[in-house]
Length: 399
RNA sequence: GCGUCGGUGGCAGAGCGGUCAAUUGCACUAGACUGUAAAUCUAGCGCCCUUUGGGCUACGGAGGUUCGAAUCCUCCCCGGCGCA
Image (cartoon, rainbow, N blue to C red; front, side):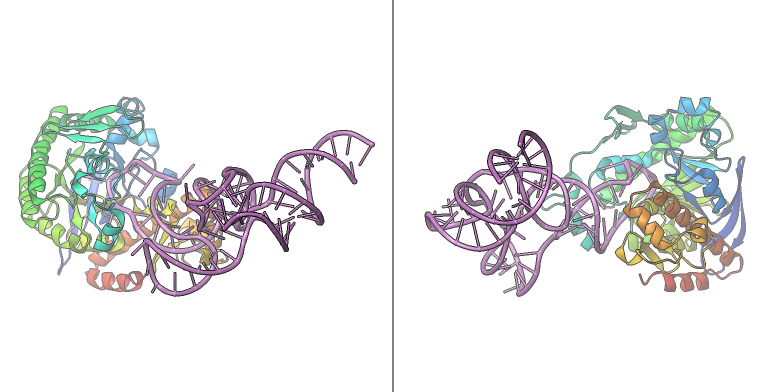
């Protein structure tokens, strides 16, 4: 993998660049759609590609459970297996420490929600930290997972995660980490961070032992705490990895602040990925804070659940108001969905629970995020990011 | 015509004397969704009032029994099935 910065923004940390991999070039900033189980939910890879997807994000834990890395390896690697010839990243399973752990059954997001939403979601009299039902047990050596599919027990360690990722064969792989909840105390975050750093070292050692030409990203953690984030960024900077991912939990309001703090310390000449962040305003904040790539489930999950993105904000297509709205999602959108289908038809498909609803809405959303990134990239290249951000959000945010 | 079983909120379908404005599913309405446990989840869903509360109208229709009825009785209307 080779990374080149083509243009650095004058008045922000933003940069436009190029990540060259064995499976092609990623022009950054780029959106990285998530295909957890080596599949975009509801969208064919060739369609995802046609709407501008450059690189995708699959998951070690899920692919280990099914079909198993041996099968993927036997198929000739994940690219061949799933018919995606472009660059692929794999997550290490670190997010499942969170999603199947403290977040399991709690409706808790790694991005701290507004107080109003939290109050609505946490059952009375229960404290967030002590809720049961976790499928995860963490120790210093690794993590025990219960499969959400069948309850079977699985153990991931840094070494095992890296070994699996080598078998899967993605272009960019990630160290095994612990994604923490925003509800965790700073004491817990510090402890988890020390563990994540130890795991990063072990991940790198295993990666080097196995050889090969995959790129390995370290993961910066530290939750919402600036001192921990700084410590983590400095640790990762000296580790000798090919690039960086920024993970863990955030406060919605200051994602940009924390990310900027981290990126100021990370080496300029290596790529930075912001894990799991993908709402429009957060992407702008991330880019301005020096992030090169973003993965997120937003386009496909929202699309599957009936919500589409537009330049004027989100539309919940199932809503009654679209029943006889015979215009496309966006009149000026060039995506295949908007070329041929109306809001009324999509609304009908969602009500009828037709699978095509997922496909058409997700396709539009993928196009939306990919073209947003392309525009952001152009803006950076022309030193006009601030203006573009302001102009875009002025139209998008008043939902 | 006789017999029999039934008519419950948009639909299906529980309830079978009080704790029933009425279980549940669907439909409907709104909300949520940020390294996917997610084609998912949450909430609302007779009307009115400011409430954890109260009032009103409701279980085909009309009467009746009872302190009290969706639940029991009588008649009527409507439907399924069987026999003529």
